[in-house]
Amino acid sequence: MEMIVTSTSAMWFLPFVVPISIWVAWSDMKFMKIPNKAVLALFAVFVVVGLIALPLGEYPWRLLHLAVVLLIGLVLSTLGLLGAGDAKFAAAMAPFIALGDFGTLAYLMSAIVLASFVTHRTFKRIKVVRNLTPDWVSWEHRKFPMGLALGSTLVAYLALGAIYGA
Image 1 (cartoon, helix red, strand yellow):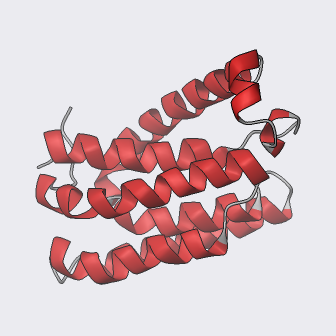
Image 2 (tube, one colour):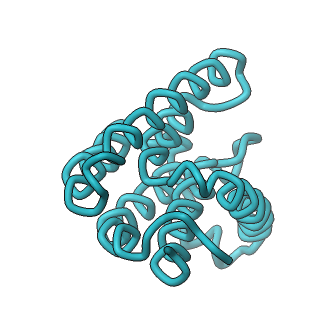
């Protein structure tokens, strides 16, 4: 697998992205909400670490990714196809993704959304898991907590970038 993201930039971002992604996944499963603070934290990581991790000429273009994905996400949210928190978190994720990796990301995200959905729906039927997490809103909600898949996708992308990146 050849990726455009450099292994150096992926390694810079990864330690900061992992805890935020875990926070987002947990919050979305427990409350069916992605906190704005998590979205802002992810954006702040990009703004600060991106200055170190990326070539200066690439940095502003990556910020443009955020604007484009936010616009698309807001339209999808308005149409009821995506939650507002999901749209905002996807926009905050966008600058971390190299434009040339869009195809790779699409395949990766497809696999992770499917795996996350199956895992979530399976675990909600396991009594031990339900007893450990009795107040999780996502167990009874008809919608799927996309924060689980979004955060997992970003972590997997950066981890693969750290291993296979340019």
